[in-house]
Every structure is written in structure tokens, then in C-alpha cells.
Length: 223
Image (cartoon, rainbow, N blue to C red; front, side, top):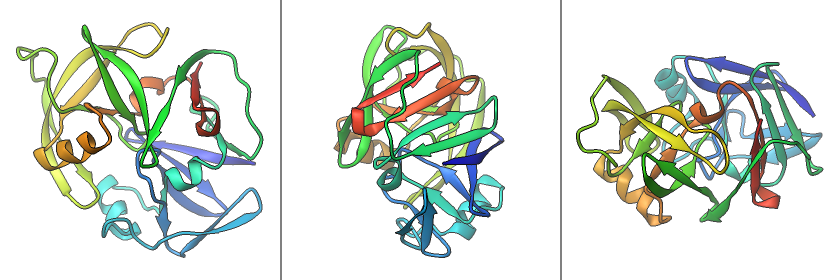
């Protein structure tokens, strides 16, 4: 079923049956108020918070009124087509076939992991559509120039400030792109390490195209 896609200040959201949700493949658990969501005519019960993060608090963090967050527990049971250009989100119980650059995904504790080349270093990263920039635990180039500082947030941790640097990034056969990277706070870096990842790659990696996200086939395709 197709839903309206909203892009606001780097965040990807969707209006589903009149309610607005942040799209977040990196969060294993969906939440919202009310505690249920209807996807493709199926009513799904969801929590009213994730690690203490509620819809009002999330709205405050991203400066956009939302009713909840769509996480991995829902994304992992469907195929999702995120079409930024046409402002559409398609969630399908059927497999979606799309031509483009295919990238393999593995899962650990419900979190999507993929191989990413940052600079000259191959890394295992969490794929997180809820992150508007990417993050690293360890920098591939210690002398990389800090361009600015940015405030972000993470459930259970709250808001934090991070320096922003740029690194060439390559996924699969996709032509290298220069992406913004923040540095993970120590607590978040330890959480990321639990699933064997070196960082997080955010939605900037496909922010000018179309993403077909197919967890049941362990793949995603970027066009």
C-alpha cells in the first residue's frame, strides 16, 4: 500500500492513516500513540515508547510533530520502497523487484548491517533511515577537518553534540559519495559494538534517489 512520504530537515517520515511516523530501520522497535498501527489492512500493536522515548519527546528532538516511529519490527516483515523524488512510501507484503545497485544486508538482534567502505577502510555499519547523517566510532582519518558541530539524539541516551566531518563512502558497486559523519558518543559506540558494527550509515546515502529495502530477502537496492 502507498503512503505519503515527508522529508523535513533530513528526516524521513510518512503519513499512515492520518498519523505521522519517523521511518527508522535502525530502531528494532516501533512505538506510537495510539499503541497500534494499520499497515496494509493489518492492525499491529506497538509500544507507546522505546527506551523511554515517546512521540512528544521525539517530536521535540526532530522539531516536527509526529505520532510515533516505524522501526525494524515492522520494516522486517514487509518490503519497503522509499521514493524521495515522488514523495511516496510503498509497504508491500509481496517482494518488490527493482533494478539498481544491490547491497547485501545481514541482521543481528533485529538490526540491519551492511559493508561500507569509508575512505580506504571497509567497515560493518548499521543501516539507519532514521539518521540524517552517518556516524563512526573510530575515524578513518584522524586529521579530517571539522566542518561544524551538530546536535542529535538517540533513544535512551538523549541529545548530544558531535563534530561533523566528511568522508568518501562506497556501498557495493555504487559510485563513491562524500557523506557527513559525526562521532558516536562513548555510550552509543558501545551499543553499536554489541552488534559488531563500527558505526551507522544514515539516509544521506540515498537521499536523492529511490531505496528498495527488502529485509526478508537480505537485500536493499538503491536507484
